[in-house]
Length: 192
Ligand SMILES: [Fe+2]
Figure 1: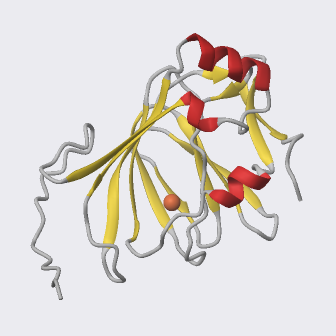
Figure 2 (figure 1 turned 45 degrees about the vertical axis):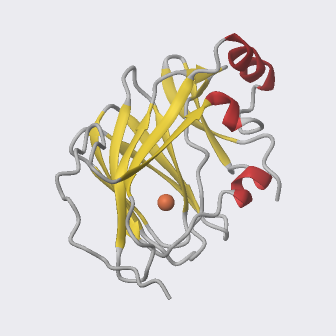
């Protein structure tokens, strides 16, 4: 049996670039968000045109065991599909009773949250502000500014991710630009 030896990790994890000796990197172009934006024509046009990089994150390769914490840096680029701001897919945690904290390093944006019972909330990011995602709430970053929204996050390491529920049902709310300002509207495509 192979024993996993947990060593003290290199803690000079760079919050801005995510660079460290041991890291996982994920880059998501817009095409990975198929079906998530309300304006499908605008989505297809943007993907055909250049399929821009929308989201990336850096995470240390830590063991996913109870008692550990996973943490990393998330970068969400600015832009819109139709009048809807660039966003992450959003997810629940497999262990639904998981809280998570995000700390905004730079940029301007929002965290849109909803739970299976139908409650939802939006909290806004600006540099130096922390946003707490309570247990049971799906969470999605939205970039409301003109520069990358960079956040640092931490949550229990064994929580797991459930992207499928949001991919299937969508989010109850969308954030769109109206008269130059963000506005929260009902998602016309949300499935009960
Ligand atoms: Fe999360």
